[in-house]
Length: 219
Ligand SMILES: N[C@@H](CCC(=O)N[C@@H](CS)C(=O)NCC(=O)O)C(=O)O
Image (cartoon, rainbow, N blue to C red):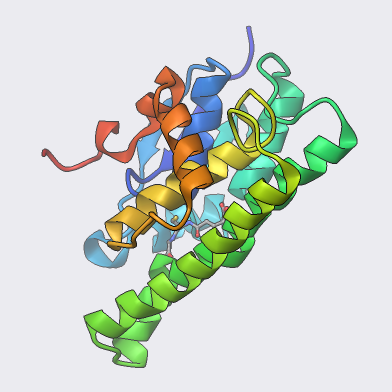
């Protein structure tokens, strides 16, 4: 019997959403432990959570006694540990493309609109809500334009890299959810939207949607 998988997660965290997609694509059973990122200053900042993940971020995945942090490396760990339904393609060039697209989202878009960054803009720099939204939109549009251009330059399949979902799709879909949340127009990115629709048709992506999580507020 394999060790249990426990995901410390928050329904609207796009980084946790990436890992939920990967777990569902692989058909791995896991227990979700909600970490409320906003209530009472954020449960991620409590000592008990910080002892598990000193970065005080979700996702954090426990696999038996091992504690894993950082969504993309968690997904790569899952891929190596549970190789059925691979999330990285079979050849080095395609693997590099999948990783580069995922990192474009996770390293170059997402950190600029993260909760603690927005809280800093609000509370310390005292930027009004409109300016904070403008900040997020600026970096999301920039990143998605590059993502779209890379897909066109390198030739996407049904999904970002080839005809099966990869690490890149696990990163893209949550970022688009986030973009919609901030009211960003996705019309300029038709290939991205086509791939998002292909992902949305798969039960694994549907199961990972924020509103379907147990800690999501009632509709
Ligand atoms: N690079 C990290 C980012 C994780 C991250 O930023 N998580 C956010 C939620 S999407 C978080 O926990 N934020 C809490 C905070 O900003 O205090 C990863 O990919 O796992």
